[in-house]
Amino acid sequence: MSLLALGLAVPTLAASDHSLGEGSSADNERLLPGVYPTDPVLASGQDVPEPPHPPLLIDWSLGLRGTYTNATSGERFDTRLIPSVSLEHLGTRSRVKFDANAEVVRPGDGGNIDVGALRLNLETEYDLDSATKFTANGNFSMTRDLPGTPGVASNVAVAPQTLSGGAALGLSRDFGRFNVSVTGAAQRNVYGTTTLVDGTVADNSGQNYWAFDSALRVGFQATPIFEVFGQAGLGRDIGDHPSAALGVTTNANDYSVKGGVTGRWNRLEATGSAGLALRRFDEASLGQVVTQLYDAQVVFTPDPTWRMLAGFATTVAPPGPNGSGTTWVDYTARAEVGYQVNSWLALRAVADWNRARFEGSSDTETGHGYGLGADYRVNAHTDVSTDYAYDRTDSTSNGVQDAHRVTMGITVSR
Image (tube, rainbow, N blue to C red; front, side, top):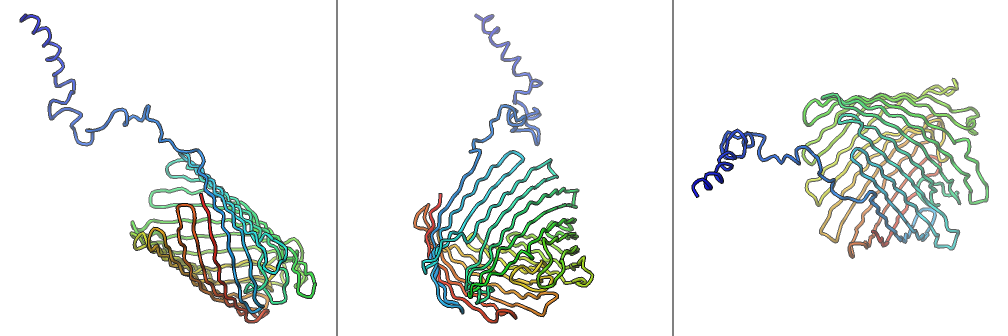
């Protein structure tokens, strides 16, 4: 019996040898700092299944809006049907997202149903490695302003349809505290005809153009909060036909340079930059346009219920069918406030201001507006909204125009 007990004890005693690392002593390797309690399977990553998730995330909504407008040009009531869909795929290194939305408008006077807007957008991202990212985006839009909209002349019966589409590629990489990004884009803009109240049809094909743009941005993370950056851009605008008003082509090269700083601290993020833009035309008689660039944006979210945004932007572009001269230079300021009162009620407010000039012409344009709105969540899939908006523009060509709008609607979503 004693021999049997000893035979059973021998394996146990052997298993208690500290060198085998079974955990009975403080100097065991599994108790060393940074080692215990590591699971050997999780540490190696073998045979650990990826958390299950659908290969494609689908979201959609369908909205119905009724808008009453009291403008300088008169009163009108429009009904809008607004469908939208979003598809997103998230991979280990990649992200692909497609968005589409439209506005189908039926005038209250019984006019023809029209597609007021159609927008398609594709965004793709791919991480080549931990420090390098590649992006590729595509976009297409078809829009038409409604008569009576501030900025559309009072003698316009049917505003021109605008088609715009393009693609952009980008590559960014981090080099320690430095980051570098390169982008390139091509955009096509086509403008339809304008029909006036007296039946006259104006051709806007002289404003159709291609835009090719590239940019190089270099940033330096000076502190954990502040990043200093510089950006240089080079572009080329090519028109289809000579301008009917100027009698010559308005093809031009665009150059820009600006520098700025970005700060991120807790729930506050702010960016500001300034620089210069040069637009030089192929036609010597048109000369060149030099303008200052100012851009800024502040986003503040003090808590999950509040979101505040303010921004200032500069736009330099061809004048389009509603403009004149050779170049449209626009300065725009905008502020937004959103407040989530509770799980079923959200409030919002917005205000904007802009001032534009048309180089090569004496025309100018200023405008401002504001709006208030609320969203009421009936259930997990249904929202009811109401909005009030006021817009006012004062332009050399169209005079003073203003509009009050009241909109009510319902949205059903996935």
